[in-house]
Image (cartoon, rainbow, N blue to C red; front, side, top):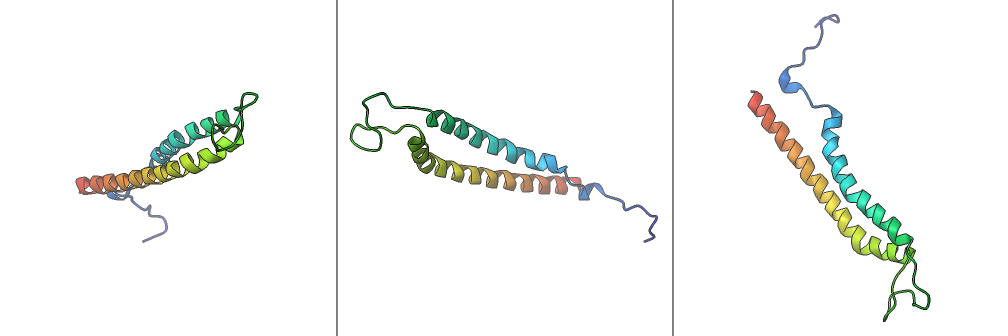
Length: 106
């Protein structure tokens, strides 16, 4: 092949733009992460009424950063797992669709 000859790309070798490949992942991540971050911001600003005890116990409640830490443990970990499963499903779906398109072109 001479240096002046252009390399031809056939339709079966074309790939979608990288932005289109990552868009579903970005939308999924934002739909999970942004509400959780907003919730943490709102909860971190909460305060207890005067005379109420703070902490985990009988009749006590959490406020501020204590509530955020407990929320990270009990809500953050399941959301992280949900985020990972969603990315896995999105990735598998993209691979299946791209293979199906490749077989339909041939």
